[in-house]
Each structure stands twice: as C-alpha cells, then as structure tokens.
Length: 285
Length: 296
Image 1 (cartoon, each protein chain N blue to C red):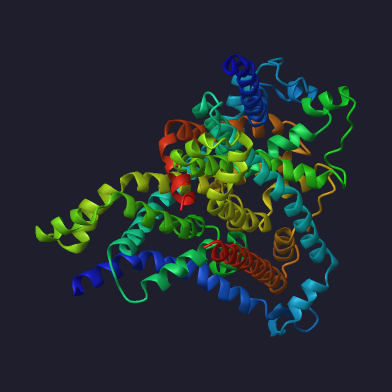
Image 2 (cartoon, one colour; image 1 turned 90 degrees about the vertical axis):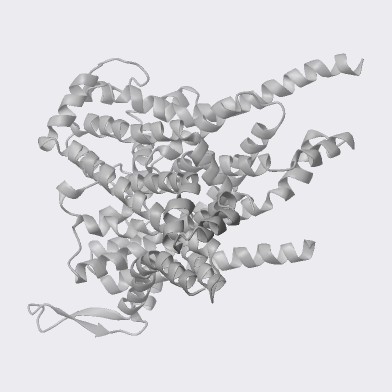
C-alpha cells in the first residue's frame, strides 16, 4: 500500500527536480542560441531586433565581410590566439608537471615551505600584477611584443598544485624505484616514466590553461597596441568600440564572437573526462 | 641522494625563476613605484622626473571618492553575487546528485558550457540582450509588465552580477557535484535506513561533508570578485550605462595608469587591492581552519 501511495509522489519529485535543472539549462543556453541566430543576420536584421529568427539571413555575407575587414586581420587574431594559447598552455603544463613531480617524488630541505609559496601564489590577484608587469616590460622594451603576453601565462601556481595531486594519484613509487634499479638517471626517469604516467594530468592542466589564455583580456589589453599582435578577445573588443559609431561593425563582432567560441566548446565537449578530472582534483580533499 | 637533489633543483628551477619574474618582482616593483610620483620639471616643457612621495599616493587614492566608491561597488557586488552563486551552484549540484535526476552528463555539460565563452564575449552578448532596441529579453519582460532598465544606476550592479553568474554558476556546480559524488554512498544508505528524508540528507550529511570545496570555491570567488574589470568595462563603453570608468578599483587603477599616466597612483591602487585580497583570503582560511579544529 505504501508503495502505491509513493509512486505519484516520486513522479512529482522527479518532474520537479528535472524541471528545475532544465530551467537552469535554458538560462545557460539561450544567450548562446541568440549568438548563433544573431551571427546569421546582417546589420539591418540585427538592429531590427527580431531575435531567434532567421530573418535577414546572411551568414555567408557576414563571414566574407569578416574575412575582408582590415585585410583579413580577424584570422590573424585567430592565429595569434591559437599561438598564445597553444604554446603558452603547453609550456605551462610542462613547467607545472616538472615542479609538481619534484614536489611529489623528492625530499629536500624546506620542501613544504617552498610548496607553501606556491599555494600563496594561487591567492595573488593576477590583475593587480598586470600593471606593474606592464611597467617592467616597458623598462626592458618587451611591451608590444608576443613575449609580453606569452611569458606571464607560463606560470600558474594552481597548475603546480594540481600536478602534485595528479602525480600522487598516477605514479606509484615502485615504478620510479624500478627505473632507478635499471640504472636510469633521475631526469631520464622523469621524462620517460613520470611524465608519461601523469599524462592525463598534463592534458588537464593544458586544457585549463588553454582556456584561461584564450579568454584572457586584461593582460593583452595592457601590453599590446599593435593590431597585428592582438588575440581574438582584444580584437573583438576593439571592433566593438568602433560599433557605437559605425553599426556596420555589429555583425562583425557577433559573427567573430561565435567563431571565437567554437574551439573551446568543441574542446570541452570532446575532453569532458579531463576537465571533470581537473575540477575534482582541485576540489575533493 | 645528491643526484636526486640535483634533479629536484632542475625540475623546480623553470617554475620558480618564472614565478619570481612575473609575480614576486612585479609585486616588489609595484610597491616601489607606489612611493614615487612624477613631477613636471621647469614649466612642464622639460619632461618629468620621479620624486619620492612617501605614502602620498596611498593617501591620494584613499582620499579620492571615486576609489572609495569602487570598494563600495565591490562590497555590493560581493554581497549580491557570492550568496547567489554559492546557493545556486550548490542547489543545482544537490539536485543533480539526488537519485531523481536524469541525463546527468547532459546537464553537467550544458550548465558548464558558458564557461567556455570568454568573459569579454559573455559581456558583449549580455549587453546586446540588455539593450532595449535589440533585446528579445527586454521585449519579453515589457510584454510581461516588467520594466527594468539594465543600464540605470540601480540596474548596473544586477546587470554585472547576472553576467558573472552566467559565466561561473555551472563551473562551480560541477565542482560541488564532483565533491558530492566522492561521498561514500554507504553513509547515505545508512542515513536512509535510519529514516532520514531527502532534505535531511542533503543539508545534514552531504553539505558538511563537502565543506572543503565550499570554502575553496568561496575563496576563489572572493579573489575573482576583487578583480572585477572586463564585464563592467564593456558596460562602460558606449552603452549609456551608469557604469563609470572608475566603477571598480581595478578600473580605477587602469584609468589612472593609461588615461592619466599617473603610474604611482595606479601602483598604489593595485597594492591596496592586492592587500585587500590577502587580508580577505587570510580571514577566510583562518575562520574555516578554526572551525575545523573545533569539530575535530
């Protein structure tokens, strides 16, 4: 009897729970849906404000205008973003894993104190550093070069923390001992055994740093003034600033934004396992 | 033993050299710069020279109403944003973790997606959605009898909070959900057998068990909130919004450096901001650390 009583109750609760989740998904996805439909419109259709429809459909026109504007500077920005994010994230992941591996595998004096410095680094607000970094870079003539936006992103204290957690999870001490007994040098052991075993962690740190660099805005804004060095975020910002005076820029900004979002969405959809692992390693324990 | 020490040094050096270059030295340089001010020499023709100014830049920043109001804005932002973010992310994570939820992978991915959108683009999208002539949202709200001006003085804070929530809600939900999933299921089964209801389990058992992630998310959110810059900058430019160019302390520092070329003042503002972050994170860790001792 109790069972018969409970069934509609469970059904009701289930509807409520999943309904609430769907509502949240709606909130998350409708701005993205708007971005997709807006990117297909010409300036007139966009300003007419008939959102979520395909009126004034001109995706091809928008794309070709995007390619033509400023001699194809948009795709230059795209390549810059790929370069900064790709090289920066790979370098950062390698540097972080090397340090995390050292913290995991070796005992040395002041180890935990040094690790404490890393943890303190996590708490430093990065935008408070950008300005002094700009002034330093202008002292040494590095302002307005790719180095100015590439070198700072090689450092991520949280990446070192994650790498240590991952090493503890993925590298059994026996594996390192076995390599040493076989006569492998310490750096050789790191390179061919440690790094290989902790590869899922490497990919996770890479993914997170790639996103962070791709989305980075403040550092390039401060450091770069040459349009040809801009990443996408800064380029779109510049176009948006023009759009207030020249509405023809609106479709460029919207279509450019859509294309700029695509690689990250693809990365997150296809690498779900990794970003979840990263968030878990950071949060549990 | 010696070989191992050498290897440890080799592996740690790249990180610590770069860390020193892009964190420690800039902090030191900012403090140094904040003690100097530029003075025009002669009649202002002969360029300028740096003069020691003691704590003058700090008193100048703290004496500036715009700078103090920036901290007021941050306070209001934190008071509105952090409870909404924590409650929202936690609520969604508990819903997803309940036995009733379906299609969990889909929900996780869909809720996480906005995090893949760069902050600047998120801000651009929402500014379009806030603009009365462009927006289906404003139109729908007006049709429903709600007139809300997202660019008005009272509307600015909710406008920025909404963008930040959209960007971070799903991200933090996934962190909480991962922590919830790590809870030993036998604990929950035992509670069910003892007759605890769903609410009781959620708030009496699950919540205390994931307190560590709550603290971590809270800490990172506070530090992130203090750096508020990109979203209000977009609202500031050409939308006719009430967001000023010195709306947050970070925007104040940026304006001081690049519009007024007053590096000393900008450095002092940056240092004050970093100090606030340090004090707050120290406070949060102290507070939660003490509570942990008490329960232990």
